Amino acid sequence: MTPPDLVLSHTALASGQPPLRLGFIGGALDSAVGYAHHTAATMDRCWTVDAGAFSLHSEQNAATAAAYGVPASRTHSDWRAMLQAEQGKLDALVVLTPTPTHAEVVSAALGAGYPVICEKALATTSAEARQIEAARNAAKGFLAVTYNYSGYPMVRQLRHMIRDGKLGRILHFQAEMPQEGFIRTDPQGNKPKPQAWRLKDGSVPTIHLDLAVHLHHLIHTLTGLSPLEVVADQTSQGWFPGVIDDVMCLARYQQDVRGHIWFSKSSLGHRNGLRLRLYGSKAAAEWFQMAPEEVLISHADGHREILDRAGDAPLAAQARYTRFKAGHPAGFIEAFANLYRDIAGCLRQHQRGEAWQTEDVYDARLAIEGLTMLEAMVKSATSRQWEPTSRP
Image (cartoon, rainbow, N blue to C red; front, top):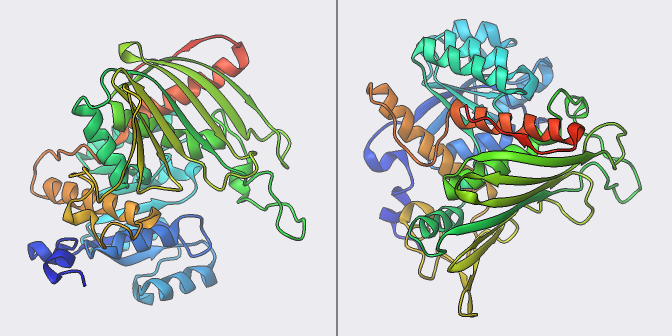
């Protein structure tokens, strides 16, 4: 059995602090991410979900509130009404509405004095992200963007190894996230039915906002480097003509690092093929999201090793990541819960009037850099030449 002190090390109860209070804007049971956010936020008892405007549809709104344990008196039909009604009752709002609405909703919430946790992508363009950042600065508020894949313990272990020089100088990388959601059928041959807003590409196609933001964030998380210029190609090959569903990109990063980035929703056989390969002067490393407990290390002398939480991985073996012992894989929701715990720590710093410090939680700055990179990809796909990625 797992010792009680190890269990408590995961929770807010370990420090004697009560859970922080959340309200959800969006995130109904029929949304893509709502239940995952609710489960992740409450897993370690760092947060409770106390209020929400979950859906514009009254029946779905009420059903979600019941499932999440939110009383009818704190279930709101409109997010604007919620901002007024919940003043002083919540520690933060989580914005889970479609990405095209984020600029309005997040800016209004910050302006009303709420700390905000926003599902990626923060916005649809870098200009919108700067608008949100300006609202945060004007309010002297708190803003965190959720990039959940960096919550995997072995991703954090890999970052530690890179910083410790185990891979040597990073030379180049491959970052890919192929999926099949826009081309696969069900067993009866029926076409997929994505959410309607995902089938409307703006100046930055939705696939970039869904997938590429993760790849940009993960490369930055692992290497600390920023992109300088890109050349890219994009196409539509699935069931939805004109909707971009496959993008390939070559990137030049700081410190003369080269990268290949591929993301797709029209690649059969990939439920979620997120894979990172980093090649250094001493060793190479590979991490695959479908086998998240393992990192494959290939050394310069030819020997290879598979590293997991039971091996020489002191960061990944920390008690906070050991909800159960190695050999019992922790997955997507646990990784998300790790990030929610990090955000809770940052918000408590903010509540004390401190400048929050962490290597695991990001605000608008990185989002602006990422969206600027995506805009350069789109421009390159039209110009058919290298395009600069201006740093914010």
